[in-house]
Amino acid sequence: MFHKAFSLSHTVAAAAALTVLGLAAPTAAAAPAADAQGYEDSTARCASADDTVLFGSTDLSRIAICKVSGGGYEYRGVRLRDGAKLIIPATRSDDGAFLAENAGVEYLVTSKSLVVSTGEKVIREETMVDFHGPSSGPGPGPAASAPKSTTPTTPLPPPLPAEVGGSAAKASG
Image (cartoon, rainbow, N blue to C red):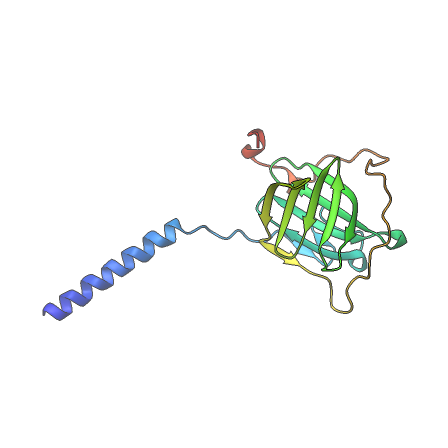
């Protein structure tokens, strides 16, 4: 009887612990809808599947790296909390990372993270929660020199529906 009661009490305690752990564990959000061009209804999307080098999502951002005419690359990013968009030239390093720079702020994209920095100071490092690397076949070759202008010639349209932040968009950050 003691053995049976002991076993039952441990089973109940283990179940209770798992329930508590289940409530405390973060829930994994489903990845945004995507296809071979990047995220649907998002700035983090390339013009065609052939132009798509990679795309990924962090808890705070969506990013796509696209091939552009002339052999260069383009960083297409969106901040999720407020839908802010950034479309700028990017370069590819020998190790396959991509770097884009805008007004002294650098955006380094790897399969593991998006690192936002200024000079030697890291502003934030966002871990990739969804990443789609180059399509099968040979990877992109070395980047040609990208245009130096980072100012778009036409204004960007308003954020797409999938990019509009919720109530957190009003909080400063």
